[in-house]
Image (cartoon, rainbow, N blue to C red; front, side, top):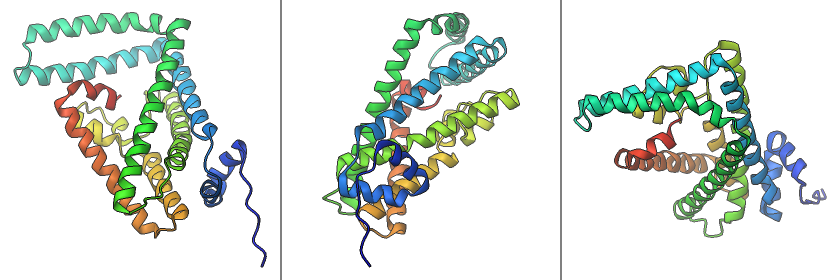
Length: 266
């Protein structure tokens, strides 16, 4: 039987293949490499969606009140922990709480300023690109060492991991629908969002337990197994081990550099 000729997929064909025929997409990556648009466009859409939904919440008195209340509850939990550990005294905690509450009440009006929104948009895009590059480099090194993939191309990993942002887009949309239907704010669909528990350890590890996050790492495993002709079980075990190991290292670092906790857990 004559083999079908492989042609480079266009951007839109790549999106369709990602959901319908991922195997064909990954074979295409192997043959032709990736495309800048494959990872850049999803990042732009995540930034737009995040800002649009946040603006919707801030324009609504109901959701704005819930957002401020949740932030205050989270801060209050954090301050109480610091007081109990002797890191700050009660007066300092009360002053911080009062100042934060005042800033939170003024924040929505400032946030909706077009200039501030533009800066927020650029900040999100730049931050996501940096994170994408770091994650791609981490998996290139990790997979290269464990699976001995010396020929593992950074460009291909960048495209695969970048396209996983499509799952993040669906998660953001579903979380918004859940918010509107229940009246309670969900920023994502991880386990931590369904409990009023502000313990950092719970929030950090609970945020990892999302069907979309787990699916993303499975698809990354599947892509590696297809492109580099590796046993799928071996690929899954390696990718998930790197994910858990990397998460653990980041968690331990954040316990020392506590300012990272507000970045890692929203």
